[in-house]
Image (spheres, one colour):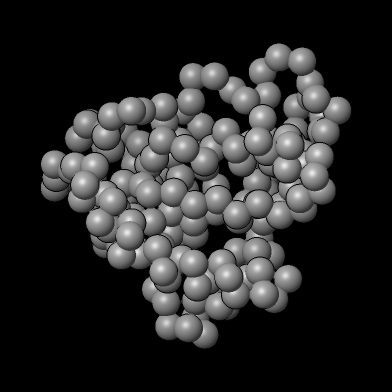
Length: 177
């Protein structure tokens, strides 16, 4: 609903961010992952039901995360010396962190990070024709050969430490728009 309200208010670009568990062995806690695509594991699809006239009944999801915005973020990160990684975000329902077997499955299916948000909002934004840029803060790691226990407090600390760098990239993207 909030995304549809944004559409009605004339919003043309949506920035989304989240804290997520990294599954890519190249990732480190605190990395900023620019989302290039997603895998939807939410049980309810946000477009189910009557089609809103903001988009087609079956929208193409080929470029859900805007390539021009991704390129701009990459350029800004390089200019500012901010490490960014890229990957596929897996959206799941929660409210639990993943089991070692789930981390392994999501990674083998092509995911690089997993979290409990973002995907429904991005689907609706794309349906409305809103350009979308997404970034995940890697707050914990669920690697196949090294399962690690995680707490909500540890996730918050990692997210708070990386948040200023994410904000710097996004602010510069807005400034250049």
